[in-house]
Length: 290
Length: 330
Image 1 (cartoon, rainbow over the protein chains, first blue to last red):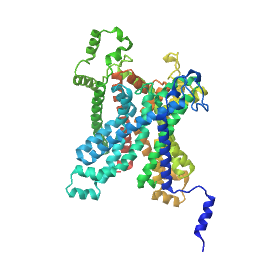
Image 2: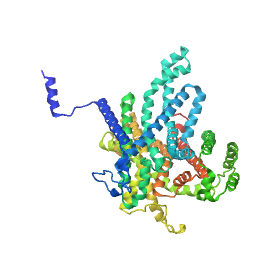
Image 3: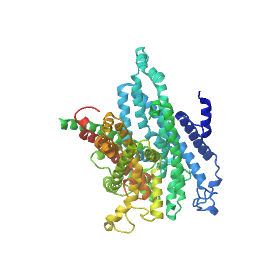
Image 4: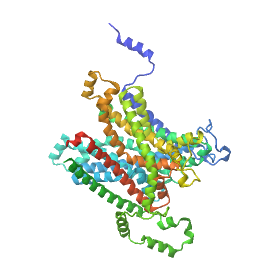
């Protein structure tokens, strides 16, 4: 008889690292991403203003241990500015994406439950909002609201719902032909009752995944629109503003002004993307097999 | 028979586009009319101190902005319907002329980026699918997913730092060299100014096509007829050429056509970074300086641009795809 336990022990000596299955790996990635993202955001929110005060003694320093991201032409520490900018961008993006996802949820639900007429109107609305390039629509809305944070948030919120609406509508259409819904209908339940009690709970995972996947787009568009000079005032250290300011100093060779803030934004957005993807895998069993 | 079907299809699409355009005009006009920015002030600009209240009223009356919004809209919509988009305040020229001239500049940029990103993305997608599961596949997938979270303008800035500031290969900005008359600009210098922005848009635009093509090709490769072909001994490029390419080319091409909206958005950012004088930069200027007629004109124009792309995609399916051509539904 072979002692399996002994064999297992032998093998585990070779591999000190614990081995995880797919699900565990997904969970660990999700956990790591959440820890990373929240630490950056909380860190950015807690940082004081003293490190971004104007200080001409430390002007135009290239990256060093004391200032890992260098300093700008006013002697402000770029790491602090970047962290604060990211916190601001993430906040704006989060708010806009949430509003956007709620619009999508309500419209998708309406389209698929309230009959043919509502469906026509909603698909038409989706087409209408998809017909103008996002950035042009954002500029128009920011202009109409006279700039400011409000314009950016409303603009991003009102341009990002169409794609998720399509997904949710398709999901509801599929659900509606399910047996339990048919039975419920035969039992004389009203449309509204079915929508809220039977369909809505099924949409919750879709909704959260959609929200997570909307988020990177929202943040990138927020950064783009502030980069173009609409929206946030130059005193707020948003990533878009930091990058558009840096453009004036590029020809003098101060590459760190643009490199690190943009890279940080990329990493943050990518981290959110990975988080959304892994959540998707965890919640949607069909997706996990791919 | 076929011609009739296509005509019918065009009529259906046409009415849909028309209703969307009318609604778009109404919506954007509504938005603009609620803007707190005073058009007279935006028009006069820094000379505001020298303009008295009477003159202000005269200007307002001349433009008709003292009338109720409904009447304003009807006047504007009537003019738009006749093809008159008004006069741009920044350029003091008809909006249509400005858009036409600027769009030609953007067209070169977007066209180059569109072609290159399409081709490179297609090749990347094929490579990833043919090498499915290897490190090549993983690298391409990772690259594409990372691109999706990269800010366009940041890539532009990086390229600017590397190629224009450090290496000095390309000019730092502007569509043509400064201080040279328009007729003296050579084609060479024009192209030189075009390369960096087009390159920026190209490396960012590949992600969608590449991932989509990879997915489609994987579907094809797992089909029974490819299994049979493999059993007969076909492999590698020949297999792809005979059984894969025709199936994946069509979705890739239509996807490229439907990406006009993102292309336009990317061009706005790239033109801003490289100070390339195209429609994108004009859009930003119109928004920042409160040039209402130009902004509205560009909104309508960009919608038409996107519609054209979508229509082309639909038409290509109608005309080329044998399954739709012969009257079956896919």
